Length: 375
Ligand SMILES: Cc1cc2nc3c(=O)[nH]c(=O)nc-3n(C[C@H](O)[C@H](O)[C@H](O)COP(=O)(O)OP(=O)(O)OC[C@H]3O[C@@H](n4cnc5c(N)ncnc54)[C@H](O)[C@@H]3O)c2cc1C
Image (cartoon, rainbow, N blue to C red):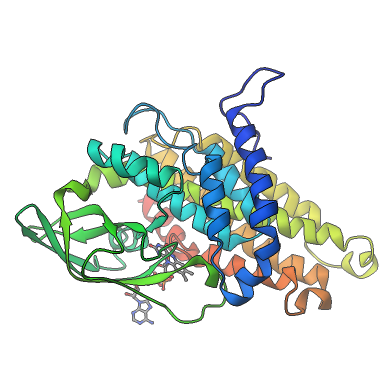
């Protein structure tokens, strides 16, 4: 299990992480649990819950202390997303998007942006996300940067489309990478209300319809130099990437716990038949414990630059995806027909698992990156 080790307090005083998780649980019971079916079936966006999680500190706990090059500890933020994912991966993924955006701003050398926009994102007052898939896949050689920037006085003019960015509304902010005319890439925060930005609906999805996922179209959008996170991005991107990937493990941990609970719920009534299944709750529980322990180890030092550390981060993210698929498939097999009903949690968990496994870095991307690290 992920232990509450961050910012430990004395025996009588709860640690900052314990307080965060206690507040988050209360907010989840009030603002998330009653809406889970509507989020899944109607694509309802859990805005009140996301703002309450921000007020509890869920998007601030992981930010580097004392400036972009200070120490950072991701474990509180990961545990917070895991708590939400025990109810609903859509909400947990929105939290991850928000925590990622806060991370990108807090790790930037742009001090005015950190001081201005940073606290509004970290508190959940301004919601948003990050277009991280396109640069990741570009660095893997699978894509080209989809946004083109033209240098103009005081900033860049940017054109192109990011096909999927989540947690976005008209008042949101996103972090996006664009190509520079002289080569290399820059990254900036972009206000969704800026002239030339359009948010287009991607069409009905298999799951995660409640995440306000949008295709973001840029038509001659002016990005002022004041909004640059990094230009060029190489050093910055390499520094933040482990944090971005590790933050995604929270949703998988909470999802795994939920699948395990489903298996335990039917263990007694369906024992006679379920005993014959290859995967028993004990296996899921052991794999979940191993994942939580590894994330606990890695989450305390997200700026470690050693290649061996990056490899462990990719392996943990891969383990999270593999576990999500295995846990959800077997939760459904254990629940049987009851789990197959529309509205049943087990079938929702299977659709959520597919998302955990295919969102960048998807299983195929992780295997590709890990294979490249061998050479
Ligand atoms: C619900 C949801 C939410 C998401 N939220 C975010 C987010 O917040 N931020 C973010 O950055 N990303 C987000 N994504 C995107 C996600 O991370 C993946 O990048 C996306 O699903 C595309 O991955 P892929 O597996 O299709 O790409 P890959 O299969 O890796 O393909 C790489 C590229 O190859 C090309 N390609 C792929 N298939 C074909 C084909 N059949 N024919 C021709 N060319 C092809 C395309 O250019 C493609 O982009 C989200 C996706 C979903 C479904």
